[in-house]
Image 1 (cartoon, rainbow, N blue to C red):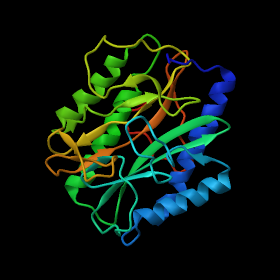
Image 2 (image 1 turned 90 degrees about the horizontal axis):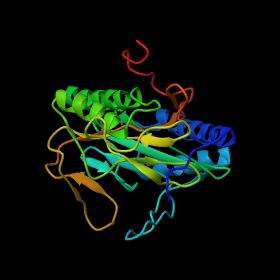
Image 3 (image 1 turned 90 degrees about the vertical axis):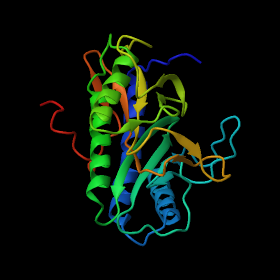
Image 4 (image 1 turned 120 degrees about the vertical axis):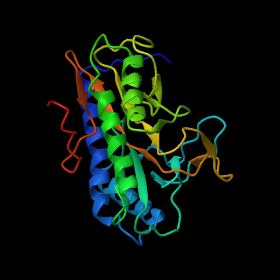
Length: 267
């Protein structure tokens, strides 16, 4: 399947799905505090989706070689890089957790994630989460027609590494539309002037996974999904779905509770 280019109707559908995905995170935000389990976060999200009239894209999702994913969202705590499965372990003060939500609305997919600090986190954890957020936006602000995906990946990598962090290579962003994962792959590292050229109507995620230590990752346990840092260092991730417009970009996964862009955006 090649890259799909969205027309006005498709863009409208993607805007709605993206906003609704972000509103799930808005709904969850006040609940994410010490003592809650990630399974309870998952239950609350499923309730929210039911009220929205959306479906979880992750529940039962089974790409080739994977077992069916068992939850309505992903919760990746501390050294979990991505695809953490909700469980009954309570979150404790100082934890960091990525909550990754993908909903389906009228056949269109909206995909976004945020980092949450549980109670008072360490300065190092706060800095990792903040730099990862900025890294995502360094990628987003490079999006416009004529730019290549290598330019986007390079911007993320250059910034993250300049701050002393490392970029996970094994997982990347992706095209999205009427399918959860479409072409192209969106790497969070790379060389300027390489890979696909951006054109209006493309929609894809930018979702860098940034580690406090080395970039190496491994599978954890035998659930077939959970990925952790090899050196047990903290990992953070943020994700937005973006549209390439005629003149630049539009972030499709924004809602009333979305964190504001960093100061350098539109600055």
